[in-house]
Length: 315
Image (cartoon, rainbow, N blue to C red; front, side, top):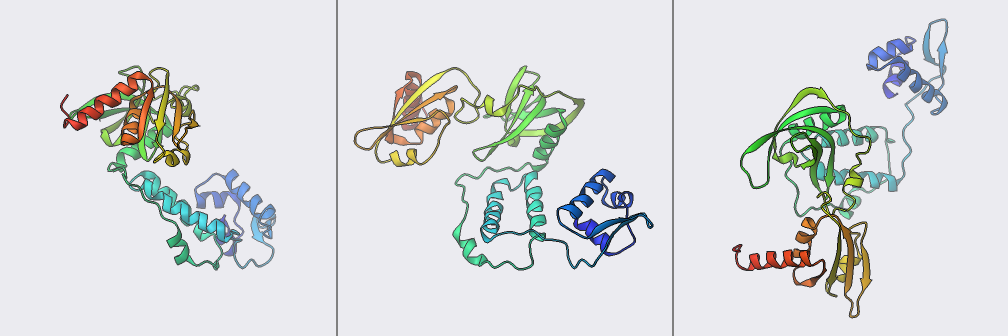
């Protein structure tokens, strides 16, 4: 619309067809934008039948800008800081570009002490994921959007060799700062999770696929403590002492969590999970401040891991 405004300022009575060619969009899009400019932005715009084009009926000094409050501008700055987790991905340039367009549409003068706001908020990640394969992530994103079947070479954890897989990329997801591709693996005949950083090559098979209507990532990970798919039904009970109880109360760790206050200031966490792999690692991170009450297999797994740590990895 700002480009349409610029053309109108130059005169010449542009019509929908000429504007569409100039903007490389369809005529219907131009028509909707013109109607929005006239009806919603109250610009003095009309169609001149004699010249078969549009014109302003009176002088327009500038295109109407967005009205934004100080709080909204601060929220925009916070959002830009939050983009740090997308560095090195194809989303970074797109998100920054969108913010720049918003910035250009803002009023010329906004009363705001930027230095104070900059010092008020920061984002810090202790373990920032190393997304060193922007072309791979770009190719996966494009294929997921266009429903293109892919042939990839993928390296499993702990292996140096990559193996070939043919996959239907359903969805890319950022879970707790880490990137994952959820795709139908034609070798395994099931939906599998792939880490983009372990994909060495991507090429199109030249075929498209139909994404199942019933596929919902939220539903797939509903019982997961991270990204592991359902392996069973587990009722997990963890007892935390008073030294770390506040940390537990201050976050929602899982949709199923239920906290029970204990005498002395401790807290007991109840979870309904479909896998124990990720919660096992999470429990180990709390050291001696937590005790596994249930299930027994989780308690045994944590005990074995702790013994291996103490013995230097020897079983």
